[in-house]
Length: 421
Image (tube, rainbow, N blue to C red):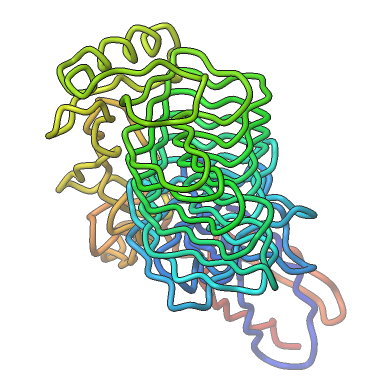
């Protein structure tokens, strides 16, 4: 890096010049408490509850369009977490849960309670597990869900274990999402969903979008208790099943009204005209598994179903990583790279990610190369050069321009003694 320094002579005998080169933006520059730069290869990393709260919007926050986030560990809500995003400023980024669990303890004054209030059309939530509880009452709430209240984006491979409860609300209660205008795929609910007066659904309350490859195994109760969705006027609800118990006034194992295709439920005493009933043996002996995989194999976005310990169809474990023992690095940082259990590559998945800790070797022929004390990376571009000025003569009042090579972020001191007389 060449830096031009203009030297103004004065009456002093010596001049101290500090050559400060601008540092490049570090991969660890943070927004609030986040690490990362928000790109797909270096997402903002959500490590704890404080990091997660940075996403809660206020008048100054972005909708995070085209920004990437990843959970790096499980998080427990202490009762102070509010929904992320809002109807006026929907979350438009990508939120990668990486199979970690967020345990909610949510009973706020928001009109909608869920991990996310509103997911925008460019937003993505995937590989997230939600546990704990979400509660709403008629005085403050309209809708209650585990993952998201309103969805216009994509919710993929998410699992709700949280107990979602609404008391005298009017708009619905669900495991994954109350109103879906986007796409929900490869998701399931095992949490208890309870609505005292309104409708409740294992996956959604009202579906105006696409639901594929989803199932419910949780207990659902409400005025209308529905295994998958209370209503689905369109366009798509396909390849789903319910095995959860239903209780309430009207019992709908798939939906109460609308359209569905290739949806299955375990036979029982239900009020329904929708879906295909199977007996208990067919639910667990591979019959249902074959039906679901016959359709899933036609769409590359859908996960393959596998039998769980009781024989019911489910999905393979969440995406997992094994981290290398050797270091990977670039010119700024080092980390342990991940290999994925399914053979895919997540370039953003890193452990022990940190900036280099530089130390310089003994100068040889005027050069000192910088080496990281942790990973051993040697940056051949990061070096100092001994500078000797020869035959430089200036007259007082004149200006002289010299070129020096400096290290980014390092201070260089140059002594210049003007000629006498």
